[in-house]
Length: 351
Image (cartoon, rainbow, N blue to C red; front, side, top):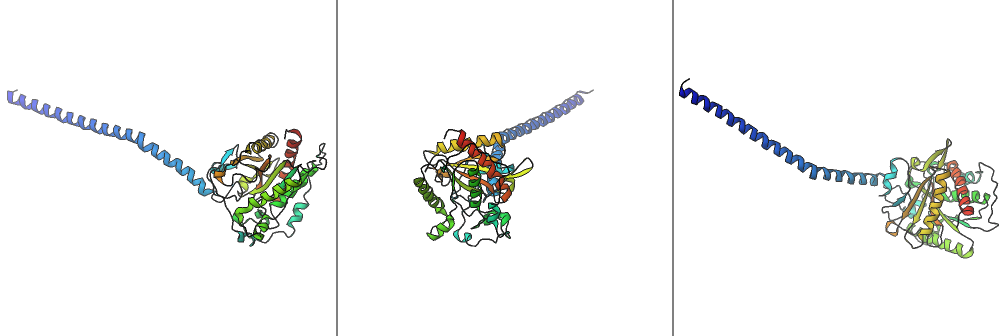
């Protein structure tokens, strides 16, 4: 092979090597760029996306339950501190952010017709499902006081042409009838009980006040009751929940019961005794009737009213019994069970 041919072949090989080296260089640069992008995505983009997803998860339940309040229609909705709380299904995650619905006064005086004319008689005729042989008694002393700050909270099964929780109010078919059920159940178990069934809404209207003053008016009545009767030791403000039946109904032994929920205001110094009382009831319920109670909610003054008249006396709590969809039968079964629990607590626990 001639010298010129040899040089030409060497040059060709050299060019091929140079091309190959350039290709390798380009591939190296491309790989470096891909690695750099991967690094950026891992440490910057992904966490940001996760943060946005977490934010969305918080916002979704806020809108999902905008008008469904564990404190019924309590005011000034703010995040809620919860303890051992279960609202059934996915609603459990929504209690942190929840609007609270405060109806205008005119809504109460545009009430729905009842599906049954004698709804109060239906409540009154409910009999205890079992024989009560109480070995305990308060011997004529009335030691327990039941009242109803949101006295017209009603139940949709007994209202004509509505399935909307925000329309569940009535002057007769309301939570005060549940209070009377509970009062009779307690009396049968030897616990002397006073039931205040005052129509707070009518009292507000008479005095030219709005719904925001409900706790002020009911608080006046609690103070008056305590002044008249120094034997009172337990104060229960009864409400019904605004959540639907999947969160306010449970099944025990094949029968439906309305769920319970306890609310303790932490906006005053003496709330600890009320919290101990609520947790004591919750413990008995967990042991004897698991699933009947959704737990205990604590609410501070930054989260609404925060006091709920619970500063007047120890052993003062809000009790929600059932919700807008519960029936008289379901409410009655729960009042009987709850009366058992209250009786056991009163006679066997240190008050």
